[in-house]
Length: 431
Ligand code: GLU
Image (cartoon, rainbow, N blue to C red; front, side, top):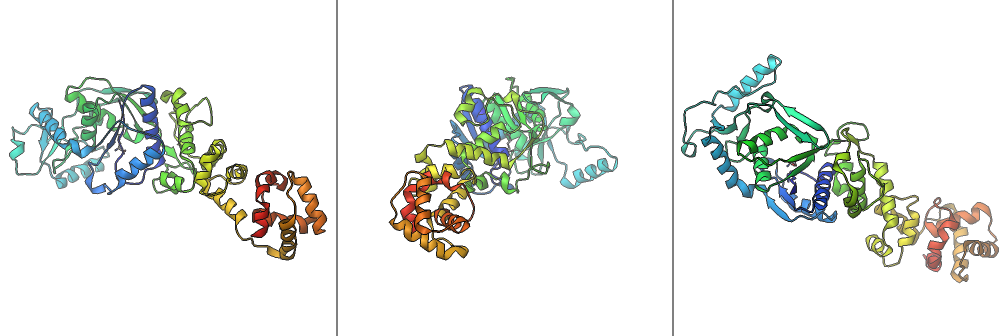
């Protein structure tokens, strides 16, 4: 069982999508179920509507799930399990106030030490928590031995009890913290492998400790994915446009290309260009590099061009939103345009009224001829006939012709373009 557990707290970024893709691929490879769990325990940061957006984005990428739920729906289980741990003396109510803790944290800081909970409330006499009036949190007692686990990417990792600490599992408002809700839910759902970003590495021993305390002994495997760096080699921020999946899609980068790129990012793959279905055949999570991956937008654009070229014409035509059959012309233009947005601009420039620049007279002459001229299969014949009839030469011939055919003063070789444009010559001569 695999799961993707996004928080509905912001736009889906490429790091999230990479995690979703890898979990989905591994679930498909293992022929097991995939859960989409919306982790909404941090109420203050939740943004309304984000879960629908996450679902929409996953669907666009062909990622489907067998189970879906919102984490807060499991609140009664989180509370039950927390009380069970308290009754077994594996967890305890902590009445320390924020102010008291703050003073201790400051003190530790001054001594140059990392703050650790000092056990003040650990041995208080038994308290009937359900009737207790004073606000409290519940902390789980730190483990008494080093916790080790194997990460498919990072190898063996170990955390001492000091590193894990007696941490909070239930907040004052009787809602679970992320670590507790996540550990309990993964346990209830029998999740067997957890793939997530490496920012969660230090949470893993805490979650292992929670499950062990609840006597859950099934082994969970982990793969923590290295962070994604931007082109300046610093951690890619959620605020950078390139990191927003929505933004990339709006630019007209195909979902198949984004998925392809995120799979090759910091990874050894047998091919460079592939579909998600193909990747399911050979993807190996253990081959993902330990080192941070560097996001290369140009590489993504190159992959996008390849996906556009490989796309069935009919499908591409639909995406171009045009009543003519322009797929082949669009594919030709990938030599100078990388996204659907750029391709649409190129095509629009061809089929809209032109700016003749300083070539107005020549353009008028050529258009008059073109309106009456027979059609030609090949460019040489077309050009020669037009040269003959117009008596124009050199730049005064080629520039206006290029403007009439493309709407631009520079661009692809006209002889290469001609096969894709020849059926529209009369139309272009009348614009
Ligand atoms: N909700 C967490 C996040 O969005 C996911 C944690 C996990 O996968 O365990 O980062």
